[in-house]
Image (cartoon, rainbow, N blue to C red; front, side, top):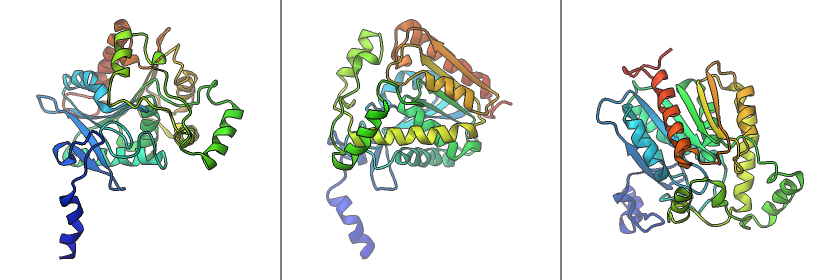
Length: 309
């Protein structure tokens, strides 16, 4: 009886997404805080040879990886992703997280769920921007479980203009008194030189176009501090792609990552003059990015589903 009444609120007022769609009608997982996270799955036509988890960046959503995921399924990879808490079609105040670790915890929960369904398959992780930070910290919690990590313009160090000592001090003070104060939004012009992609970003209703809150910036800074400690522990194969003119995630972070990880198999490809979202850049850049990613995975995951040595 008690169990029945405990389930009643869910039945009488089903949880709905920020877009007012009942979660029962959407693919989703429920995280440890009881928040519903919208999920996407791209299943290959043939038997999958590996799993690929995609971690999207700050303010965006996993639907923006549909074109990349479709290409990965062509390699017989089973791709999956979710909108992080406070993003896209998932629950939570927009771009608010109590602790950056929530993103890592939720990613591991989703990965564990898929590994349970496909215990024989190797798993790779792919992250862009803040999703790169999520990927690094997720792998560092379970270093032996991942067969490879792919990072597109990862957040590894703070951008020098953004993180001056005075600004860091001011953010910490503000976080104590005005954690919800908005510090300005992500400049869409810094995302890509491709005007068409920029327009699709600015008109996407699932992208958060508001200001970044002080409390969120503090969590990004916490993540950067944790990454510095995590990188020396990493030994897995790593591919990093970064634009030399990225104003949102400093390319110095990718150079630092290359110097600091213990991986024998590590590659950094720099795209001269390219901006932040390389997979949404000018066609010559994004086409190359897709080719690099597909080739890199193809060389490291065998057709039989065994991670190649």
